[in-house]
Length: 534
Image 1: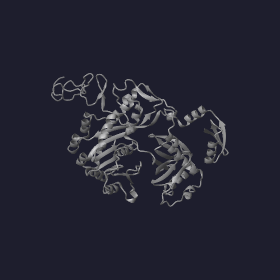
Image 2 (image 1 turned 120 degrees about the vertical axis):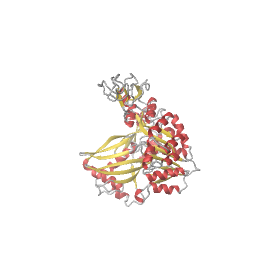
Image 3 (image 1 turned 90 degrees about the horizontal axis):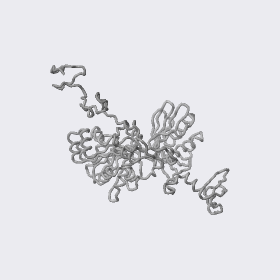
Image 4 (image 1 turned 30 degrees about the vertical axis):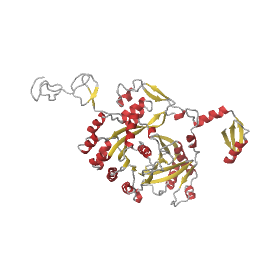
């Protein structure tokens, strides 16, 4: 059966068996509607259900996806026990009744589209609502400019902010229940020339921790990570910019470590995943619960594994590394662009090189790229411009790369979900000696390359060759690979600017004296250093 229409409390059901009185009575009792039945064939109903819920490859429904299809506006704003507002006061807080529906619609649509952020941006003639989905912002809803102030006030009241303060940034929090899902919204306001802009970070409390094998590690990288996870003590760092999946990776590592014989503690701001087996603490700077204070207190709680959300300052870094030295396994994140650059960043924060070399076990740099839709992808020739920008080797992608044309399953985008690019730096005795004595990032990088180290770009190239993502995504996330190059005067090939002679034709980089090898201008016939005629 499937509902067809609803008019004046009369629900029309298309049924393969309209004589099924038992189900008709149950639906009438559950919905409160009067029921009218019409007959339809099983194949027609099944076809419409498949179109609505999108069957998987086996022709089966994914029950989890169906359960997450929440009806519009069906969300509850949850209030903390110490709230000074009642539910009625909050619902009646706006004088314009549509505002409640507008804000509820914005939140419920963001949850339905699995957005990570909601942007409420005031413009001159209207306000635009944008959702960040799979790392990209999309314009979703526009509301009239005259309703912007009321919408902002509604959101500020729900997050317990001062609605009279419009000249300073504020931070708050809203808890929302949507169907079977619990969602936390971290609210941030910022004054702009057209009014206050609001950004809400969506944290799904009901989202489960992903197994490591589902994150997109290549087999050899996975083997090295499994070896790191089995270390009894030390520090493992996940590095990358905001929104690159660092916390997801740390929790996946933590989930693999889970053991009833050990004590697990997490310190975060905010708590993004919820694990029953771990003791989770969230940081509250305003109440004196800062990262260093909580971390010091946690060390007195007999922990075996500590997850520190982020190393932000010298004090947190120092405590974390000393905790790793005293027999604890520490998982943490750092904002850097590459794995080896994290060591430079730690030294810049004030961590002593001997602490880094003694405590550090591994660094994993990562990015998130959109994953190609498996239903509409196809092979095509490589784009020459992309090949130049990304410095793709000539012998790579000889059979072309993958693209996607877009279909109903991927909403016409050609992409479905995201996958990680990873760059793993695992410590060994040689690296420890180099870091603790005369650390140079370039020398460390060369030594790592000789041991099979793979960069984010090289990891991305492998995933492109497997048809998991595209070169366009690598360019969007990693940017053009710019090198110091020059054009050879002899053969006009592009070569490394450091080469003294062209590897293709042998023409020197600059005219030099045949006797003393001092540089000479191209039109000189006599060397000014030794006087020899050329």
